[in-house]
Image (tube, rainbow, N blue to C red; front, side, top):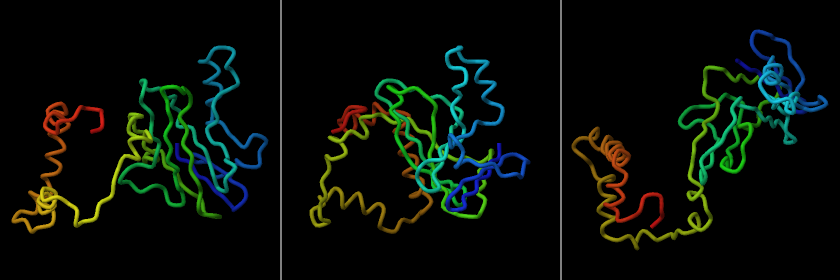
Length: 212
């Protein structure tokens, strides 16, 4: 559903659908609200001991202008995989909203998939439209952000680059008779690697899924 949020610098209000009336979010007893009509649906589905505990749709966070939104999804991943929750790649987000990025280790934590964001405009309604992507969820292997791999890098001066890397750089920097062919070369190479990851790994003399 289309959603509107309004932050006056202290309180957060919301409205939805065709209803133009503003409802308080922050300042209420719980600082949270349910998706319209969903609490009853939840109680019909879940075991008796979970009735009355439907995850909130919107929650006001302690940070100024901060809001947590439930996507309506529950998330669980295979062992060793997490979910990255972030703004959509290469798409502008709603004006006046900054979506926070985070990684949830959903192989050991099963629960509602939330996203957190901050309203950065005051006294101006922010529109979150049902038909426009608001966030992106991407599975990532936990090995990709382990400290021993993230910290295993070195910086070099340009003068220290080997001849092979200067040659590789020349394919990008030097003029090319067919610019469209150059622009498409990278995309073709990546697609080939995705189709035959094992062959590509063998070419690099590495193992798939493991660092050098």
